[in-house]
Image 1 (cartoon, helix red, strand yellow):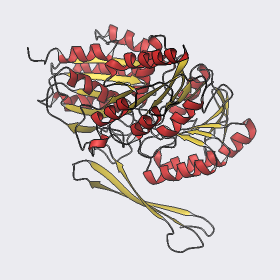
Image 2 (cartoon, rainbow over the protein chains, first blue to last red):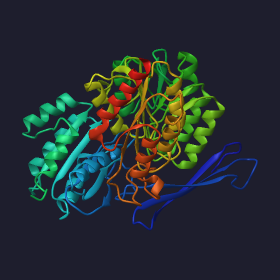
Image 3 (cartoon, rainbow over the protein chains, first blue to last red):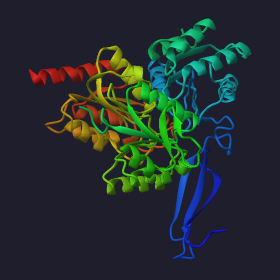
Length: 207
Length: 296
């Protein structure tokens, strides 16, 4: 119940599906105050939701996937508490793959603070997609600590059942420790995005 | 010199008591930034990493003279938090969060204009003037002082670009993450004006992508007779039409949004354009050479 003299914000949200198959949320917000008994401003907004959950993103893994056709795959995961980034660097990797004469199969962005379960979900998605021939993990971490990501990658690689090649290029916050962890796990961390792309297209490029 | 923030900036971190706020507090202090206050409404924290914590932005600014705010709250709380720090007197506000409703972004931009304040974001890693002030969470080792002013819609691409420049011995005056959303606190045209007016910025580097029209603003600037030499990297050549590639504004809905149209427009305006990240350093060096030739 709203007390006299108080403004109250009422928010209603619901999920919609857009014509392109993505999930979006829509909502309305209104403010009520003593001067008016009816809402005096109503605003609507659309947010693209991560596709898998309506619960708070931090609680469950969330992914956004755009399917393409072709060889190779670009995968990028990066997040902070309140920001999700890495998408543009993924596009940069996709451009380099296209320059090599191949086409990225998938733009998969694990955003909104991915958990180890989120990364595992991403690998399950990619490993289960027959169009994906090789996987590139490209992360330049600012808020994301790539040493923590390296630890998770090691665990995933150790338990993974498929043999699709995985190429890593991780740079950014925690880089030195990430390099140590990757080396100890027998995983190679490419210094540059170009060398990582060259490595990921090599096994799938037609002779 | 630097633009928007400098060595005298006094930073408050709104949301300092959360995990990310705490990490950021340590990180900013280690980078040499003057972090003078934290705000943690409703939390029973007196200090974080030795930084005094207040319940409201007004109390924090009054007690410490904070004039820059780094706001770490979820999108649903962002409008209230940003309006609070503007009202408290902060003149630079960085909001890194993703998913801010467009309506809220419009309201924030309007409020900032009325208060003669600058909002960086949303959906940004922040802003850094290397060795002077960092307001955000970019990895500090990627940056070094130098002549390039950098404007970027993307966080990760700005880290990549700065790392490549720094590794090649080319430094930066200020790196501004304007963010990937369609409504920004500071857009490319406004950011480029600030870098143009900064005497220490000799060359401008713009990092763009498909969708939106910031790139055309850069092209218009570069076509001016007194424009500083400008380089650009545009990504998204391989992006399919009609699919939003992560950023809310990264959508090719028309030919003008496309990679090829933007590259053409920038090249016609005299910008040294890299069509992909492989060509970035060469484009930057050509712009720097153009500057050096102009001085001679």
